[in-house]
Amino acid sequence: MVSPATSDVHPTMGVKIFSAGVSACLADVITFPLDTAKVRLQIQGEGPTSSAIRYKGVLGTITTLAKTEGPVKLYSGLPAGLQRQISFASLRIGLYDTVQEFYTSENDTTPSLGSRIAAGLTTGGVAVFIGQPTEVVKVRLQAQSHLHGLKPRYTGTYNAYRIIATTESLKSLWKGTTPNLLRNIIINCTELVTYDLMKGALVRNKILADDVPCHLLSALIAGFCTTLLSSPVDVVKTRFINSPPGQYISVPSCALTMLNKEGPTAFFKGFVPSFLRLASWNVIMFVCFEQLKRELMKSRQPVDYAT
Image (tube, rainbow, N blue to C red; front, side, top):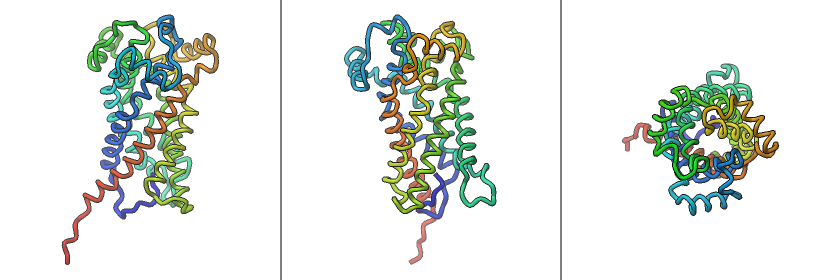
């Protein structure tokens, strides 16, 4: 994301954080049904309550959810999802370039792969700790009716925060931080580094100009690579976060239970909706992010009134 810009004025850190937050929220609103479908497929087969309804494929899951629980259910947890993007994506994406510059030596003309990865690790780690409560609430709201029959555990976003904090503990809002941290380190390093490298290569080799087609292709490739590497950790994270107290004693216990009961393929449950969601999310977010940065910086440039 540091390839030559069309403008001589480089975006400020504030512009990057704001642009990342707005773009991530827009991408989340559009792709949220795919995320809900992914969660439902990931927890399918986890317990006896999951045998009532069987989901098959992306469209099958979305259709079944819409028919049995109503179309609104596809957006259950969206407020928490938007809160997550504001507190999470704005930092991990908006701070990436700034942190990358910090890790880059003054003698280097372009950032090395090591500095890119270090930046992804840093921004991803910081963002997870800040945004983890929103992740816990989002996942539980998306999954709740599947595991707990007709009576939901939570009636809304803020009700979920309150119930989790009072009936379990305040610490439970950070439940699953370890697998989520690992997942987002993988995602941040793979997604941002792959996007950065692909975009740089396409522009540098004059295959595509630094514009929408270049951003779109780079985002698609980054989305596929990220989904492939992060899927096993993502499934474990979802299962562990959604589990009631005492079901799993630890994250490794959750992973071993999955492996013993459902086999290795369980770690790739929901892979297709996960890819569709992440790829489309990447395309929407990165394209909007790049364009919004440019427009905001244009608006900050002084106007020449000389005639």
